[in-house]
Amino acid sequence: MSSRRVRVRFAPSPTGPLHMGGVRTALYSYLFAKKHGGDFLLRIEDTDQNRFVPGAEDYIIASLKWCGISPNEGVGFGDGPHAPYRQSERKALYRQYAEQLERDGYAYLAFDTPEEMEALRKEAEANKQNFAYDATTRTNLRNSLTMSSEEVAAAIASGEHYVIRLKVPQNEEIAFTDLIRGEVSFRSHVVDDKVLLKGDGMPTYHLAHIVDDYLMEITHAIRGEEWLPSAPAHILIYRYLGWENAMPQYAHLPLLLKPDGNGKLSKRDGDRLGFPVFPMDWNDPSSGELSSGYKERGYYPEAFVNMLAFLGWNPGTEQEIFTLEELAQAFHIEQIQHAGAKFDPEKAKWFNEQHLRRRSASVIAASIRGELAKTYGMAADDARLQETYLVKAVELLQPRVQFEHEMIAVGAYLFEAPSAYDEAVIAKKWKANYRPLFERLAAEWETQAATTEDTLKAWFESQCAAHGIKPGEVLQLLRVLVSGQGGGVDLFGMLVLLGAATCASRLHKALELELLKGE
Ligand code: GLU
Image 1 (cartoon, protein in one colour):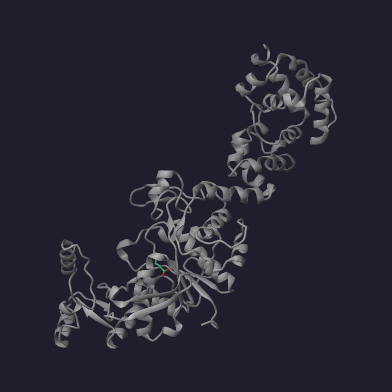
Image 2 (tube, helix red, strand yellow; image 1 turned 180 degrees about the horizontal axis):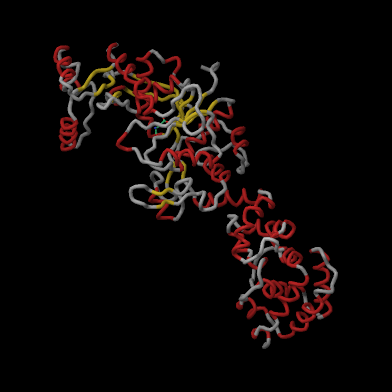
């Protein structure tokens, strides 16, 4: 096995939008493949026609693209040597393996109708039990183990509905090594006789993923914990097909848990607590309902992916902020925790904030320029939209927001004169004897020569000293009179950026305020 080229697949079913837990599975699979210089591929498992949702496949592909998790083979990413990668297009392939298992005595034909099965389930339920088609019940049911070969032939000839089931031995130990959980073992009596091939000729997940993982030379199958109970059946299928040596190593990922309380993170938790559970907006084709996505909320894909990576894994160091490439370097599948990972929506925002702080201000400037121009009615050649001004504005705002789009509103005073002032701050701080100082500042701002934060500060302090006022008493007032707000970006950085003419005119205007006329 170790000599084989590492090949990992992400194998979602197009039954709806990809949940963030699904993206995490894709991410871990991708990171593992990259870490080992291997291949990562996307296979669409669409054998359950009843659960097919139009648009889901495109959504999966678009989400992976947005995240930068790019398969080197598979649906939507260019075919590779094992095309097709959509199971519905591989339908003809699977039957032979189910039949091989049947011929070899490891599977059998079951003719029980869906109605009969339903009745058995109901009956068991009435006795507070679960019906299982297994070694204890199959001997009393209508299948090729209890029927004569003539009866079986006749049933097939008359077109009776049948499925092919795995014949699970009654009392055997089935063990395997899970990459995350280590040694795992099951008694076979807990495993039911899984359907391998359905009445419509489509394989179930159990058969299809094994045939495909085998044919696609998959070395590692990383999937959700919900598949762990089925793993022993999968081990048996590999064994019975004679493929045990080529069996991929399984890794079962821990669940994503609700932020509050216990249980699996669901869309309802997101609706209830106001965070997305999907990577991108999803428009449900049947209900028309819109579910919001991280992308549209303004998350950077690298922040989303960084946050997801830490839901169940950490590198064992203090470092938390990683690019996708860095994650691939640092990733060790053995470091994935066994226990479920609690999702923290505040931490998700924090990851975005951290990535925003590390992002080039010039890249952010380019990204918000259009929206800024629109919001503040600036023409394309407006000086405030040019590189020198805008990059500096972004640098001032970078430590103060979690999302790029927040800069537009948070930084309003960098783009237009205030129309309102924080009156509470003024009422609390203003003293009539400050007026001469502020009048002097307004009058002389344009003629003073300071062009840096330090020289401007020195000039301001000398003005304060000349009026016998401590700078600390009036700093916040200066901020309010120029920006309208009691808090905000670095004060002298803002004043230098706005420029002398703007500062002077804003001060003149503010000094007209009624609030500043009295005591
Ligand atoms: N189609 C399965 C699912 O969506 C894939 C599980 C696996 O990765 O093997 O859950």
